[in-house]
Image (cartoon, rainbow, N blue to C red; front, top):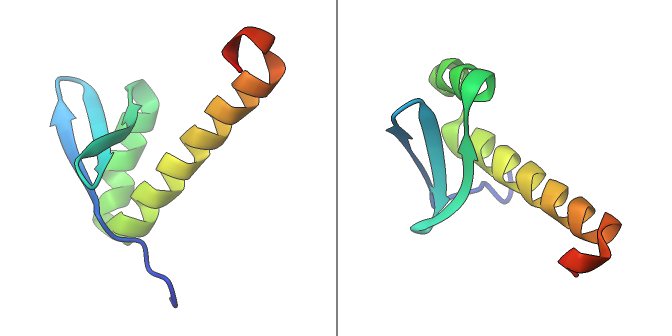
Length: 72
């Protein structure tokens, strides 16, 4: 991979998985997503997996802001 993601870290906080990027919280996984992440991180590239999850979460936030005029 040419531009391999880096700087991601994850910790377990209770029943949540907190993914951070360079020390700032990027996303928090709960429930089934947290369990799936814990399994997937063992068998794939953790940096790539965390980058995908963090980017998808930000896209969701952008979509919500676009749909709601109060969030602009």
